[in-house]
Image 1 (cartoon, rainbow, N blue to C red):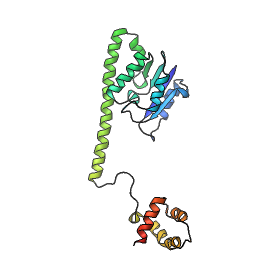
Image 2 (cartoon, rainbow, N blue to C red; image 1 turned 180 degrees about the horizontal axis):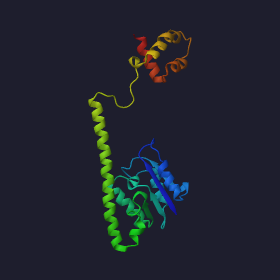
Image 3 (tube, rainbow, N blue to C red; image 1 turned 30 degrees about the vertical axis):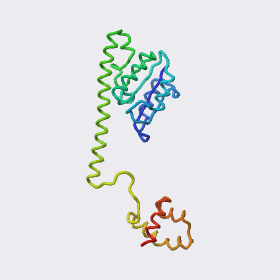
Image 4 (cartoon, helix red, strand yellow; image 1 turned 30 degrees about the horizontal axis):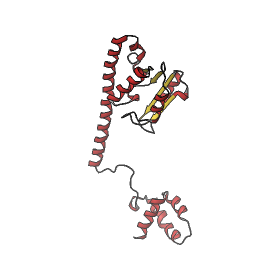
Length: 207
């Protein structure tokens, strides 16, 4: 049976390219497992579900080795578990000429040795790339802080309102206080959410 595994690191990343490759290989959609999670470990729901259904003789496809994971020891351990304990096979589409466990198995003991060497090299590269990503993120955060940039969602307060919002506030605050308009109506007019709205109303009341 053909099985596909697709992984991206976050919820907003696009999986279409990886999915299409699996579909083009003739893999049924119910046997394509997708995780939107970091590759730092293998505690991923869809990956663990996939492992539970793998049987001897199955063929698992991944787009690239780093889609399987980015942890050096974990990649080697999982690869060997699938290919040598479950007796299934793995094909890495990006490096299919090198990473097709069926080819190594056909070469006997020397094939296993070669597989270990290639796997160690590529797993090391995948982990180093993960470390570089984390380093770049840390450097970016440090640089932003040094420049005084606010990280995360910007805080909204009375001073941060636009000129148009201030005008709407000034014109309609008395109406809201006199219950001529509701809080919900006033929120919509200002384009604010409930918590922010009441925070700004409190600020404005104290002016």
